[in-house]
Image 1 (cartoon, rainbow, N blue to C red):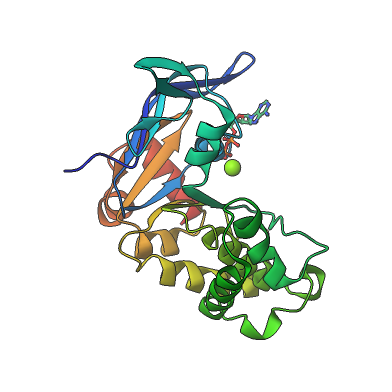
Image 2 (cartoon, rainbow, N blue to C red):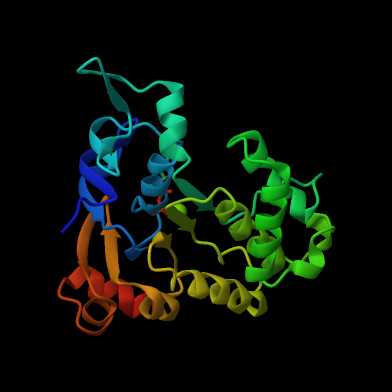
Length: 255
Ligand code: ADP
Ligand code: MG
């Protein structure tokens, strides 16, 4: 098998006395769709935040596409990562947050085109065309000139997904993308993610409490507990025949 696209090697993350990632070993293969489930406070969001370089780690190494996230080799020596290196790593990933975090003063289309023009230096015409294709993909072509506050939560989150995709990431990270939504709006967002999961080459790492959905789209489900993977397997294995008592207990409470 080729090199994993994401690899955590004995990663420790602490906040003061609290160990949030406890010598975590975790990897994701190119194109794999992986779901992280687990109790609140088990370190799920921290995994995604570390990948986006929003949190530094205390020990271990994180690799993206085989390259260390926090270090780079220059002249045959390993140095602390430069801002340019971090940006290069970050640009391979798109993240969708629980709170949609759209730019409130920009139209829907402008939310999608701003970063590709500014950060990637792509031409306005190309970016605009790509933006319109992505709005079509998430079913919002007719909303492109509206402002975020004029949209429902479900529509805003679909814009959030399109905006992340506009940066042409190899990896999409989702942190409880439907948790802030009214129940009747959850389905439309899950449908968009479901559609994306069919993209063969796109790697997806998703934290969710939607167990039925996780079962449908995941190649692999990881159950996190206290900063470690307590148990992992195919959805079939994990949901139908969990081995660990802790997993059984968690699933009994949420299913
Ligand atoms: P999860 O997403 O699984 O609910 P998180 O990864 O968000 O868990 O958090 C893991 C633990 O780390 C929690 O106990 C949380 O309170 C703590 N934590 C997260 N961010 C910070 C921070 N910036 N400062 C202090 N503690 C934090
Ligand atoms: Mg979280």
